[in-house]
Length: 233
Length: 233
DNA sequence: TCAAACCATATTTTCGAAAATACTAGCGCT
DNA sequence: AGCGCTAGTATTTTCGAAAATATGGTTTGA
Image 1: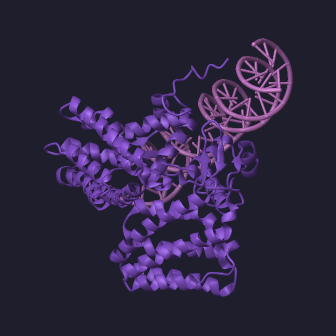
Image 2: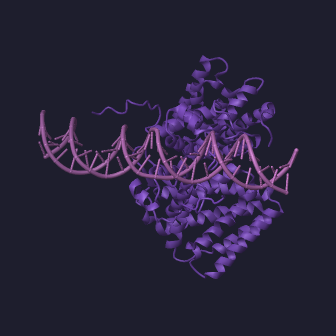
Image 3: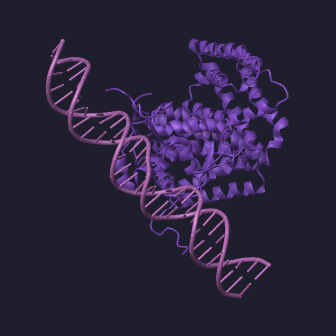
């Protein structure tokens, strides 16, 4: 028979460990698992219905991505958030995204252009449906991520793309904070459209400038309106 | 009793898994474990004297660093090497190192300067002892790594420092190839001295230029003298 | 009173067997 | 002969118990 694993539902990935890593990644970036929270195996075992070993592997993955931190012999905890981490992360993301967008604009072919346009179109449709507060809609988040991915997709650097993705995930928690605490919604749609136009217009300098500001904006919002959330640093 | 774990020798790290990861990382970068080689658990169990689970955790770590690749349900293999990977890696390393050196020069205090000078001094002593072929001397490799780390140490970006370290490890295999196949030794000592001088002289532009060329040199060597080692791509 | 040593408990880490899955070779069929 | 299917084997993945290690509270001695 070619029945593939009915016993256990695996939403993502082929192995249970990668499935659990995926679920936990989600809970961390949405702050359902709180920053700094210690992750005890007994509790996790109950929550995810997997054994020590499997959970350990999932946690090791997330630790490599910087979403949890592992202290040897003292278990795992959700990676803390802090202003200094946000600032560090932001600068790293700008460095990398700017380079990748420039290269993508240089290398991108017709298919790349089409992918950029179609992904921003999809984003627009979702934004049109839910007039406000689309920022914590999972569907919007996915489309948003895919739009940004499409911009850099033609860069030709698997290494930096992998790093970029992991930094993007790490930034998700701060984006959520920003969305919750800023006084009024940002004109993200406008920023995205401008980015798209610069990209398909092959105006690399402008696209780099825009992406840097786009990333920096969220950070500035958090610093301005939510810095009291962080203890110190 | 406060006897701490005599049963098993742990050279590095507190847990067995991190110790094994450390040992395997070494074997991968020195190519004792060959690029592309499949890693079967039974064989590893024999070689390292640890159980499935522990090995699995170690491998998961190395996979995150890009030294091994995990194919779900089909085990692990040592990450292959290729020209395209080398070129990708090189470009990523230059992007990051250039940025970090610039920031380090900007932020570095007296202690940083002293650390740079003392680490290049140590490197010089080792090079003086063994007149030739110091390139595969582990002691030299350590001092070499520490010199390069000292240059960027004051950058203030934990995130990028972590990424930098992982890319540096990945590049080690290509450095070994370069050292073995180039017709005559490069004047690395001179390059390092020039870098040090630019750094402590706070000449950021020159330091960035030098580090970019320094990283690119090894890559050019590999491409020129050893590209037949790689199958295709 | 304070600090250091010690025990009891909580928690993580490691193990090897058992289950699940992929691979291979041999068979039958067109 | 070539192709798909099946059964048997190799390999990976998962499990829960057992060992190792940390933690917190209590007692003891100065």
